[in-house]
Amino acid sequence: MPHMSAVEADEALAAERTALSNERTLLAYTRTALTFGVAGATLLQFFEGGLLVEATGVICLLVAAGLGAFGIVRFASVRADIRSRRVLGRAGDEEDEED
Image 1 (cartoon, one colour):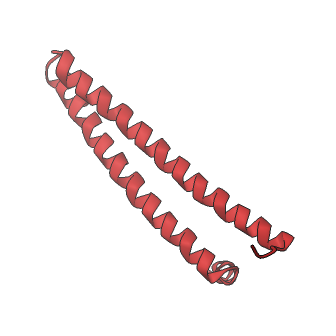
Image 2 (tube, rainbow, N blue to C red):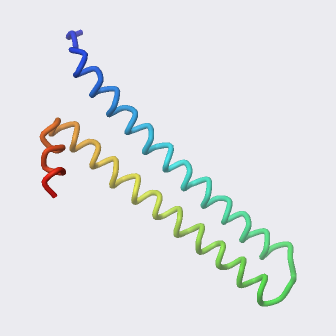
């Protein structure tokens, strides 16, 4: 096992924290989408309040689907960015500062 300098170890740990943060964010999107989905399904299944209740239930289900899809797309995008920065090393940081 090769010996890592303190800077390399800090960078490796920072990259790992970033990846774990991305996973936590995906779980938060998933949890929120499931909450909206359950709320929408509950409104549609158990309440007979007319058009308003049905519309609210359908909107909750659509929001759930949108949040779930957005969370997955965002997770994949950020994961690709994290992986590309690991490959590029610190050179990618200098490019971001110029933008």
